[in-house]
Length: 337
Image 1 (cartoon, rainbow, N blue to C red):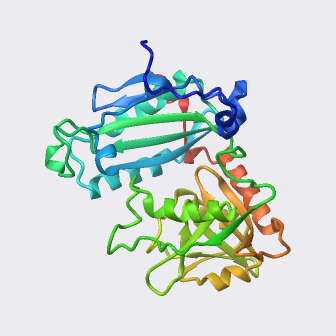
Image 2 (cartoon, rainbow, N blue to C red):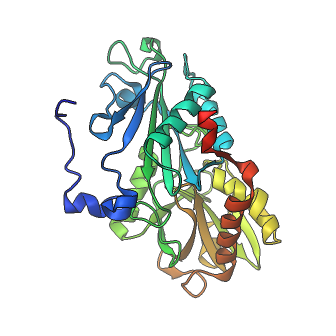
């Protein structure tokens, strides 16, 4: 391979400090292979050459959809749910000449096996509208089919890239409101994340893990910039409607499965920020970070300021579900059959 003009210095101490695992042998992402390409013509390339064209729609206008997927113990967790949402989002955005489901699965499994990633790994699966014949926002200039990117990384749940699920984290409420379905429906899992990034910047500046985003219809809580959010009161769970947020896969696991495991109910309703301040416990959910206890919001301690027993019980139930519910995951060995 010729020398890339854009190679990163991944051995820089500042870069290593931000990488999951800090570049340790078991979690070294410096030499990973990434799958990139249009339908029928994708291939694995070294990280150094993992680039897309300046004419790709993701570059031209953030015109792409994506999913985050976790790998546990040689199994791809909740694959069907993630692929359903990926293709639903592509359909809503009117993508044409889209990769087939079998092509996406083949690329995903090929990438994971080539990188030796069978546990504690995370995949960012991206489908762009594809290459344009000339610089433009107009989808009529997309003639070559979608571009598929399979970016798999060694990424333990407890790492620099996620949250502290043992000690809990602090949130602030953001002045940035979550997108309304009247503008850009958050149920489309799209790559245009500026709405979220603006809120995340506020969290970073405040030294918080993330920011709670309110909706446009009365200022009720929608989600954080990166996760769904729940509160616990009197041993019952409450979470906002998905009107202004992405109905996450891990969110659905809490509602559909974990409530039964811990013998409680989940109320899906409008919730104000004040209700979160006085909750017994608060936690967030996401594929990357799983279930994260929230110990402080806007300077107010949640409970006694430490992860509560209910969230700890939910975390244990989630780990048990990963281990025992084989119907919710797909074995990596299917790739070779």
